[in-house]
Image 1 (cartoon, rainbow, N blue to C red):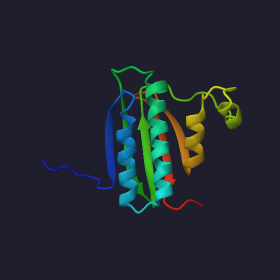
Image 2: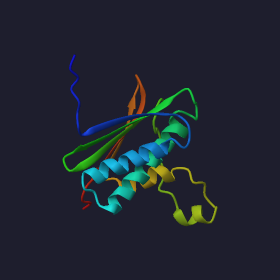
Image 3: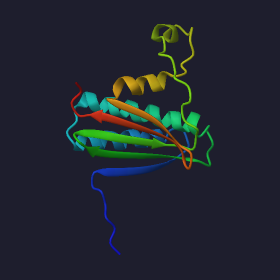
Length: 146
């Protein structure tokens, strides 16, 4: 039996335990480095992946250790494509842009800051609701940011 492998795609299945997001971060950084991304873009990718996985663990899977987060990282069209899947219902409300100054002064909660960071650092972000398997977040990070 022969299995076809996409050599530009990595899939990671993480237990829903805080700390395991670091595996996805390190993997995405190594992947981006292999494809010649700048140090600055690699840091963006690490932040994006960490925030997406943490949101999936905490909000999507609601901290349940009997669930997993699936992270798929691929390279296509001069960009890193990341998909993060969890068992949640997805984002149903549009989150307001956080007030950084109020957050820094402990006047506002940090709610929504991760989504804000993802949207600011990525070139494309798409939230999907997949009724069969949970929520999927698709992110594109271009090698050269416009």
